[in-house]
Length: 297
Image 1 (cartoon, rainbow, N blue to C red):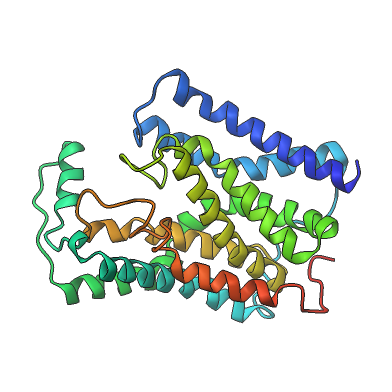
Image 2 (tube, rainbow, N blue to C red):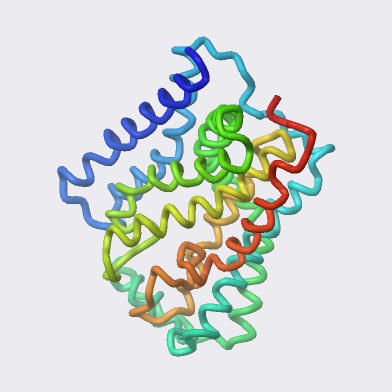
């Protein structure tokens, strides 16, 4: 099986598995963000790894998947992976609340409503702005230590960055491959977006606008993950960064009032919330393709 055959096979298997695993959501008319949807979303993260293993077996491919940590030679990438996601997510949330101060709710009323819907009768104390900022900084600092998130992220990173990205680079060149990789990664999330992943409640143009925004978010985030992988020669920095994003992405909702626009923020999946990631992605795209050292060879 040639290079293009492997690319098409991976995409075919991945999208087929996505359809198979998410089909119960449509057949059973599952509740958005309910237990079934949450369980499937966890399984979803391991489908790219399964797709890569299937294609490797069919193609008798013995190429590496960049599983070696390479910590000694990639300290910069590990530091970026650990601390940039939390910092950029906080910056995006801060920008959102500056632009939409009416959505800031230090009484944490939104969280109280979520707990009530979950059947939990517990009062949520009001916080001060310094406490909210301090809590956000603390969460950003400990996000790289939430190992369970990195393990879940491994399933996506080994498929999209470890297996597919090198093949796309050989076919398209570094910059275009990184961009296309992110777009394809975002498209794979479409069925879950329909059931409230990242974009919940009522919002303009749902679910198509949510799917489009997810593609934008995955493309921007994918640039960061790809850069970390290519410059470290390992998928582990990308796993850490991916897991850190997942650890902090819902945090801004703790101090956000009901009725916020999910397409804008304050989570990093909104266009304002991801502002820091957009700037970072643009900067990294300028650096891609400029190094003579090809770590995927």
